[in-house]
Image (cartoon, rainbow over all chains, first blue to last red; front, side, top):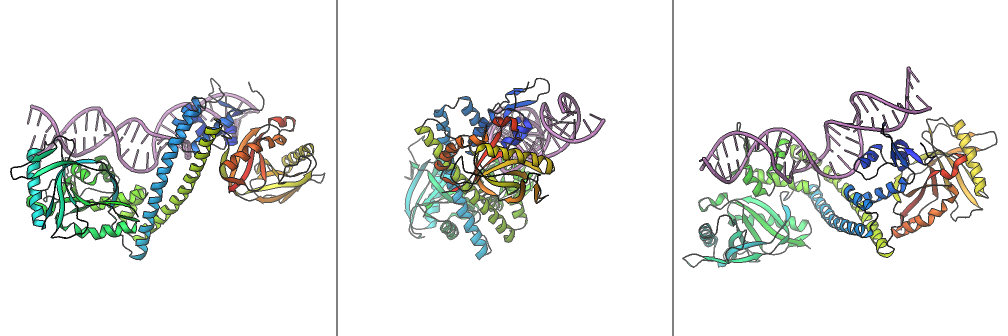
Length: 283
Length: 283
DNA sequence: TTGCTCCTCACGTCACGTGAGGTGGC
DNA sequence: TTGCTCCTCACGTCACGTGAGGTGGC
């Protein structure tokens, strides 16, 4: 039932279009490109010449990064250019974002390679960069003369939190170092609990300690590093992070934070599991 | 058998490291990060505090785009910085290449979106860009006064090819338009067969027609489009390709070619399946 | 009759996410 | 006793590549 020279078996069609037979069978299977005819009993697929531009259109859309699912929709909607435009716009955004992250990867790779070449050792190879969503915080901010005083406040906050904050909204303890310069006898710290809902605007204890609700804004980039030990020794890690941040083309952007990943135990502060968090931005 | 506060069950460890339990189990399974201890009968996994920086190192390498297989090797070779350097260098190259192709995608997306916005119609949406490897060609180059004369030469080349070139090295017929400007009465065309091995340096027939072997150099970028019809009507498609090439920031770079994807039949030239090939480069 | 082309399963890919179904410790 | 956490399968993902095993037309 050949119609002359313009009907091809799958092998010829695949050679002409420079794709594999498997690809053609797969596109048939998912309904993306059905052969012009299929022989009932042998199952042989026959493609027409008119299907060549169709296949090429598909390949072009694939090259642009659309998924086969999306291409199926585009082809079915009979080239509804509004739909197509929308898909292409979405893809555009995706590609732009991926370009940014790839560039950042490249920078990081370069600094790591440079580190190997100079020191032979990797610096801060356990520093993880990530984003942080906005969170609610029940906290108190105080000027304190010493770490001992800070530890007192932590103790009071922990006791108050356990009593006054419902267990299902109680998140981890967070300490924020507001002082831009590090002065161990002039601490400006905020200590409080992350809470999962805005239940209470404020909680107080009998001694006058008050935790007020505030929103901790989202952070786009946070250089984080987990350490175990006394929170007041955290500054030991600051140099490491600083070097890392600078080497990767960032700079510090805001108050650094310490997040208690395990509930703090006042009798075992030296075993605290604390995540150091440094907001950063491109410099 | 707890050793104090520095041993974690999988749930705690996953929360601290901000990864999923499934990920930890998977890394255990593939030998990337075994728990410090596993209880024999329950199968419970116990992680030590010292494994936190190890896990973060893994996550950093993953962020850089290494595969888990590669990370396993890096971690096993005890930070052999030579191996690591090599891996990172390889990755660097991959990322640079992928950046280039992504940028090109972006350009193409932009032109397609612009096309939708202006014309509402897609222009040349079946033009495929690809690379072409170097090939061997047994061909003759001639100045001809008309398409009829060119068709004569094609016929002679086909007959000669069938007779004098072994079937297993005989590739498709190729025509190259060497004249930079298109003049239907002043054709400068090269006609010949792609051959898969350098068997013979030249073949002749009794009339004096001679096909000489030469290398067709590789082409990095080729804008291609398959059409069915008389080869001499190919110029009808040239405008379309030209618009496409210009809109995408390319320019023509070399003689255009017509590749016969199906063996040409002199009695049915109007059914020829021909791939138009236009070497291009970024402009 | 012998190649050649076609066919239909079915597994493998990569790094997990997501249930299903079941068990131990407070 | 009831939740909670842990466990081990096992399937699904995306777009095919790669055999295995078998059948029709020249």
